[in-house]
Amino acid sequence: MDSTFALPPRVASDFHFVIPIIVIANVLWYAIKILLRSKGYQIHWLYGHFSDVPNMVRLVTATPNTAIRVCYIALLVALLAAVAVFIFLAVRVFVDFGAA
Image 1 (tube, rainbow, N blue to C red):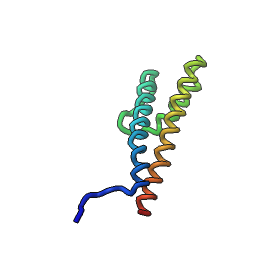
Image 2: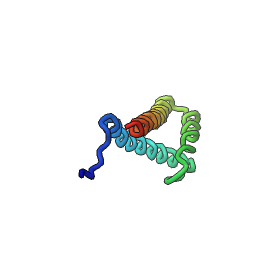
Image 3: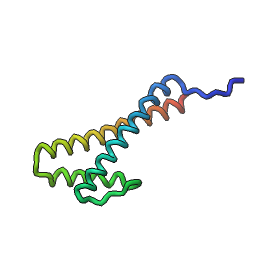
Image 4: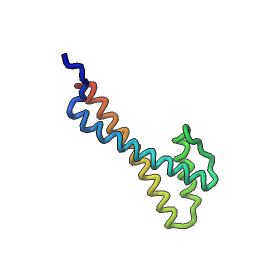
């Protein structure tokens, strides 16, 4: 009897994209935390990640330099896109895993 566990092929193909997205989202999130902290915003390293998003929006609106503001917006959009892709892939993995 074979006791190895293998993901169904479609689940496995989606799952291999989930881990890099998690890493990318965390790198972006902690880059935002470091940026916010350097600008005087109160942050928490281990929790309260979603409270960083409104603080980042406040930072964007308070930044007078257009070039820097565009960089901040790009960082925020990249984070939100990574979170959206993660949610999409995670739902696909769990739905396909349940159907397999």
